[in-house]
Length: 117
Image (cartoon, rainbow, N blue to C red; front, top):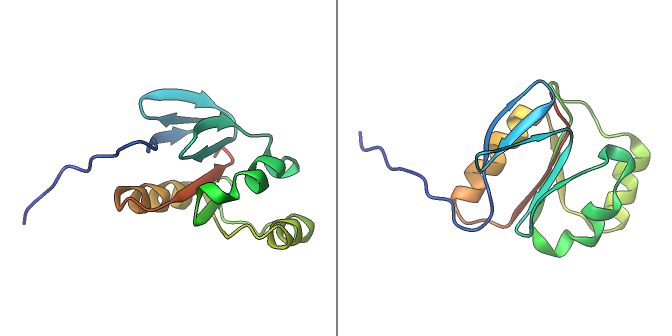
């Protein structure tokens, strides 16, 4: 078996996560985050949809991490994102981070909005 190192160019990967924090490209950030090819920014959570909507041109799919477990988006949130044309997938934050990193390693245009575990 051949093991190849994954090199991320441009957009930062999620290195690690824990109770209330994420480590992105070696830097620890506390709380909810929103990542795109524009970088990492703190996110106000499900009550703060504007950044997800106004940046929808920066990604082909947005992974929304709902915390430790997969939970459905509240109907009003899902409806607002759908009406705005935001392509999203909902999962637990650990799965969202892993999926984001895999697609990022394939040079895909992905976004990540994550709530802490």
